[in-house]
Image (cartoon, rainbow, N blue to C red):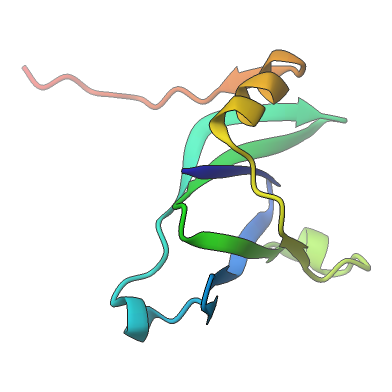
Length: 107
């Protein structure tokens, strides 16, 4: 698995694998990208940790809310995805938070 941090209000756009742009028809599925329940706080901004499958080489990210759309940055391409060891090192040097989900027990 590979990982990356993404600011709150940004979303994943296009995804590239070794043979080029990810094509759902060729792979018969979308890429496996999951937002985890861990985030960093940097300069009062939440940076969520995402997990992505090894087949992915590059990820395009872009603003998802109108708050960010008017900024000069329209999209960013992430080429250096992180390993699990790099994520742990980053979490140890930053203010990390966990989002706890409400789990209702069935009685």
